[in-house]
Length: 162
Image 1 (cartoon, rainbow, N blue to C red):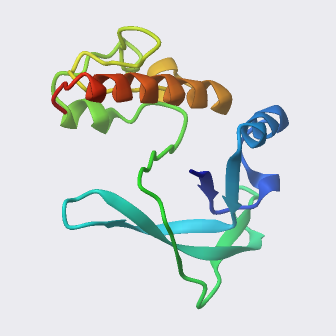
Image 2: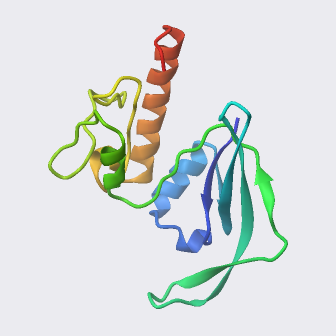
Image 3: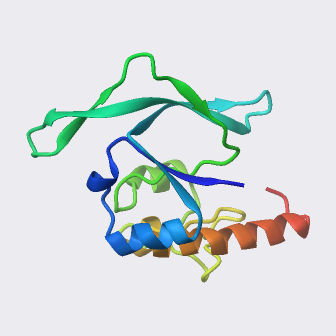
């Protein structure tokens, strides 16, 4: 029912353009800033059921000049979620290809998909965002996620094995 962006710094430090944030908010995205996930919680079948988070506060600037996030003691809480998409950085992580045989990539390391639904060269494995396009906008990544979600749902409804 809810979609969250969880980020350990504040809105002012969010690495996104103002328009991207506005578009995300228009889509109903809830920003949980000054929040840091610490653990993924799963059920007995391995399905995601939540994540443990801690609240953060901004301390003194680090070597890069950005204010360093610090954990607020005693602020741990659980955010109930049933799906997680980790978005870290703006270039494809080379570990994805080396740990997932059968994924085709281009010369820049971006995953190759069969079209806008995000289906990769490996059955029932979908990709989108920077892992496919390289550095781009959050709104484009969100759109790719929606297209992939539609395709995944259609594949499951059609009885394709996961």
